[in-house]
Image 1 (cartoon, protein in one colour):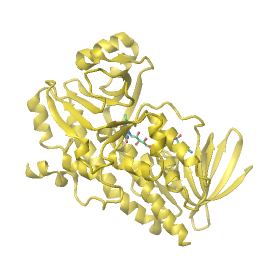
Image 2 (spheres, rainbow, N blue to C red; image 1 turned 90 degrees about the vertical axis):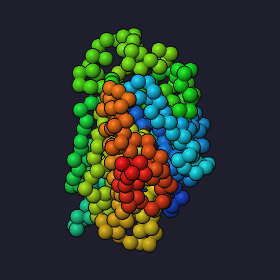
Image 3 (tube, rainbow, N blue to C red; image 1 turned 120 degrees about the horizontal axis):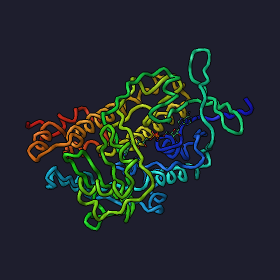
Image 4 (tube, rainbow, N blue to C red; image 1 turned 30 degrees about the vertical axis):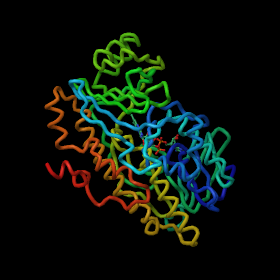
Length: 411
Ligand SMILES: Cc1cc2nc3c(=O)[nH]c(=O)nc-3n(C[C@H](O)[C@H](O)[C@H](O)COP(=O)(O)OP(=O)(O)OC[C@H]3O[C@@H](n4cnc5c(N)ncnc54)[C@H](O)[C@@H]3O)c2cc1C
């Protein structure tokens, strides 16, 4: 070990969950160290949409101006076309939550991460160790986590901390070192992420989805001119799409979803994303906690993964600050208040998103078929959206998504 840093809070992972936690701790009086292997923010093509409650939370930590100056665009409506290209659902996002934060905000994911990083690093108490990877946890004789070790090209460092926070994504190493179990489920398909020039036929403030015989396709504006398009890929399709070239891929997309005719595909490669679902057995341990994808992943149909991560960060910061300000030891029992504030909400979102995916990704062949499936799912139910878009400090839901849905309760 060549170096030692003493701090209050050590965060492993400086993406959405980790940097939002750092933003929440600005001006807390606590010293915070973030460890992140990527010096430059990677060009990820997933996670571009923020729910209204998250826009509000980003405003409260001072990050919103940094998103807006990077060109974040508001999305006010959500429209779904069915297998016969009929409008199946049209929801005004503006009616699901109170003003002024009654819209979704979209920005290419790397710019979102950059905005959070800029906000966090403006805090004098936040230090980023970029280019370093956490390599293990430090513990005292009772097994309580007391810090972590990290390594990078410049050497190794021992970071002593009162609380260690694992925000290191779905394959979390911190989760493994803490011995917290989870069962990661995958789906029998994944997604091709295309980035395209928006068609003039698509409103610039509308999230658009197609649920049809060829599977799910979304068109999500991420700038005034560009849309991110997840296209459901069945086994073998991704390989074929890589081989046929962009002109042929464009023809194929246009056959499936005619709106592609007036869209220009950027030729930046064929990027597959796996869809994961998991919810870990525990969020906390003695001296440590997990947040974001490290502790849960949701199917992305409501676009809520980052909201869950940032909502976790909000509650983790509140509980950690309370304990450390009071001079209390952050043992698992004391950190349990954080898990209590987050687990019911996250479980609700995961279940609702999974039900949504049951319809959206089922490649229905007719209007009647999709209607029949919707009778058993919460897809874009305004009652359910009201719960998932609720203010971060609203009480966690006590109902399941089915119980929260007037339509499904009636059925
Ligand atoms: C196809 C798709 C579409 C999606 N769309 C949306 C959407 O529209 N809206 C939305 O809200 N969510 C969406 N999501 C989900 C969202 O992208 C994630 O939930 C969110 O970005 C997770 O953030 P995170 O910080 O928890 O994890 P990650 O983004 O995985 O970040 C983990 C960080 O930890 C770092 N790390 C890993 N190992 C170590 C280590 N040993 N030491 C230090 N650091 C380490 C990594 O470098 C990385 O920076 C989507 C997901 C998918 C797959």
